[in-house]
Amino acid sequence: MRSSSIREARTRAALGGFTLIEVAVVLLIFAILVSGLAVPVATQLRLRKLEETRRQLDEAKETLLGFAAAHGRLPCPASDASRGQESFAAGGDSTNGGCSNFHDGYLPAASLGLAPLDSEGYLRDAWASPRSRIRYAVFGGGLAVNGVVNPLTRVNGMQSATLSGLGAAAHFLFICASGNGVSAAGCGPASNQLTRRAAFVLLSLGPDAPAAPPAASDAARNLDGDAVFVFHETTEAPGNEFDDMLHWVPVHLVASRLIAAGRLP
Image (cartoon, rainbow, N blue to C red; front, side):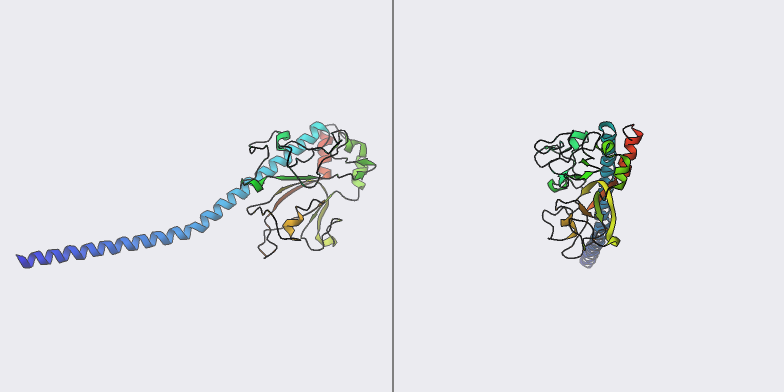
């Protein structure tokens, strides 16, 4: 009897040990699976946010074109202090198109009626951090086309500049394929120029949204306040990381919307 009890005890111990090993193996397999899925899940989340931000930029673009058709001008960018409303310079208004910051401002989402806005009236991209407010630049800054100063942001400024004048203008905003050779005057080599006829630019700083990109990097050039912007695929080159998302609209597309609205020629 005693021998039988010993055998049963040993059998139970063996079975118990085998069960613990099985559990350990299952847990190990589960951990491997979870770690293997972590990267794809993170990638999927990133892709969803990229797609959502593209949708926001597309919606903003169409809203800006609708504003131009309704008001005969593009709005001024919002400033840090304007709470999402377009911001005019001292003495500036819609009749002279004098914006406080033509090339270094934010989308005037509150003026445009876009939503959802953050607590201060700005539209953020899908990453939704304080650095994620969608930025907006528009041609102007005292520059004239066919004798008309700030023709895109003043009421009927494009009408006064005329279609032929707009077509003959030397440049509007520049979009460059890289920051190499770029200056405040343009993209440098002709091969680096994607366009010099952008009427406005919409910019998301992307997933990283650095507070201070490395000096002279492509990301820094999009924040330096001039009329020249850089756009290319995401790169992770040390010192020149770039994941900005840029949408731009050529001046002829703005003009075509005004023609359709009966505001041009």
